Length: 365
Length: 232
Image (cartoon, rainbow over all chains, first blue to last red):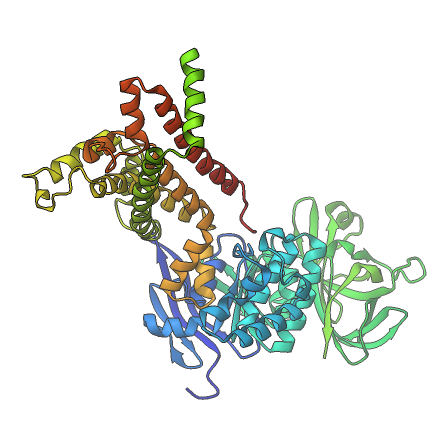
């Protein structure tokens, strides 16, 4: 019961369903204001874990504590459930107006009419859907419906929000706009969140910590960049290791081009941010060009780094090269090129990529 | 064919004149079937919801039995209700055989499985995660059940209509347990049977027209309801 107790703490959680062990989580923590994403393929147990954390499924064994208090009996789990909210992949709206949908959790808690009105309007405002207040939930687009669902969850001022693939059924532009808003709202309200997703970029955008799940277990749990850089095993590597995700510091911004410093090197790419801010960005391995001599003058690429080949892994039609240029970099090269260039582990080469090959994931203090 | 057209003409005249006897028969029909439907709603919606939300071995069997009950032949119900209410039957002491009360009992027995079956289907048709979503909004189990029933209200209304439509047009049980006593237990269907057997086609047609109109109204509302969609 100390102030230092984590917001949510899970110990030795076991879930057996139909004779099959579907969850085995020796330990999991969620701190105040923290956004934890759980990534993993379909059937890895993400949803089951989320439902268990939301106390909507009861574990076969194990212990859950919220700020040090054990959540076990039916009564304590009911009290605990009122401190959190959950949003699913489907909006699951009720057949009534947007206002009444958002008011549902507040009505369940028996709040006064005035308080309900005030909180519903605040929540609608938060998700930019105040103009939809009187509309029937049957007449909403996919994005509007999911915004309503999120507004309904945030209306109850949850301490923790569980998000189960909340963007999975939205089209890309709708999805991006909603992620932007959710990122801002999570920051503004300081709500802790646990988000299940199979999209690593969504996870990178929103989360402070990332847990990779497979077969009901958490294979790796840590800051997103660490999980991306140091995958603990082949599974994590194959699931998250598709991108070079790097964390640098902005030193300059000119004409929409950022200069970011990382391990004493400068990387340039398009983006808007202020000097001094941190920048999280990624480079697709297939966009990296390898040359044996310095290509300066012969290429339009703005980013050129001398590098050492640490490891070469044949992947069939292409080879995966692990490079060290002060920071780690992964490049894909056709097997033919590897032969022509006589590349071998330990060789000194040059890695180059265009500024447009770099994608800014997020920036901030 | 003259018989038919003459019948129609006289029937329309009877209806236009608001014949007292015809009105009384219609009113009793509505009253008996209405009360029976209400009783079946209370029993059917609660047991149907319970059945849909609970999980126990043999649940499928119970649902199959309920669904079979949706087609319960009225004469069979009439027969058993008669036996139970017979003077020296188990409930003979109530002395309600050949009364509207007996008809209400019989019709409730016919409508309950219809309402129960439709309730089970309506609740099952809601999105599977809706139950969890309601609980995640902080609802108690009781609040969750009430919200689910509210969400299933349109298909449930279809259940109401189906139940009412089933019993208002039923004749076997009403004639057996009600006895078709003039001015007391005579309803639209039993009166139609009697008037037809007597050759009073005009009255029979008038009664049938009212019955048809009621059934049409019920089905029209039903169709309208079933074409509404749920939100995403």
